Length: 346
Image 1 (tube, rainbow, N blue to C red):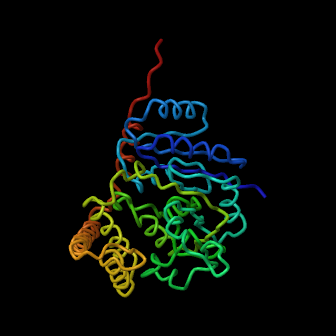
Image 2: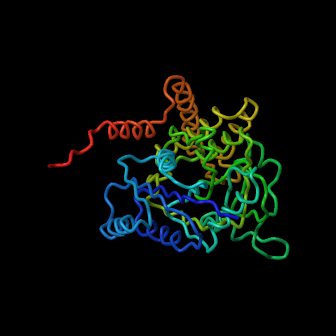
Image 3: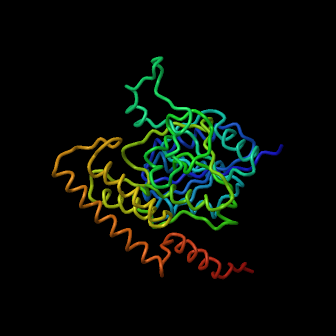
């Protein structure tokens, strides 16, 4: 059986050594046909990184694209329009890959034509540390075989879908953005793209994408063999912003509410809003945030502001679809096409 051509897509922003290590891990994969597409939103790299990327690009080991804006959904869409693969794998710029990673993703598409997306397992450094103290009855590390039914309910799935500790292959509702793959025709045939209105850290942008993908005939399949380690670097990435900042807090709630307004029915929305308030505002498990009255009030204010901000974003969609960076890319392409061809001197 002929293996599919794979495009490994890496959006990056303000990363240096971890980006180089990530690319090296991909280059060492033993897979017959793949390309690496790097969408670089960093304006000024360290000299070592700049030289490294330039050399790989010249040697055709990577395809390096530089843009003068920063948007995770925008960078992913930009890469898809240039990718050559039949299968598109999206990873972050701060990960470690095991041998056979590309094969693990590819085999799912080869074996089952009903699968349109693969959600890989993520050994998340921070989340694994949170659960390090938990042990099962036989004193082995915490893990689960199958996700509970709630993990397929769009209203509350986001508090039950665990792609860190789940060990068995199964159908899921969404993937994690640092380790997911899709068939190309999700974009080209069904015209489903990442929504560039998801801001900042772009939390829930992959959830929004997967909820729309589920409207097709395709399934989203979780394969724990398609695993990687997410380092979770504290600086850089496509959202170089502290989680304590007002901008991050507003963006966090805006993105959750936008996903709900776009994809969920009223009953599902109300369940999500209630859980979001209980967990992220009141600080109850699994969020386990401070119960200080002052902090609850502050979080409540951002919760309300985020809701109204998302309502406005959704309303504005009646005349503006928000695909700002796709539009910029299209305009640049049109201008390039209109430029006269250089004349040969006589």
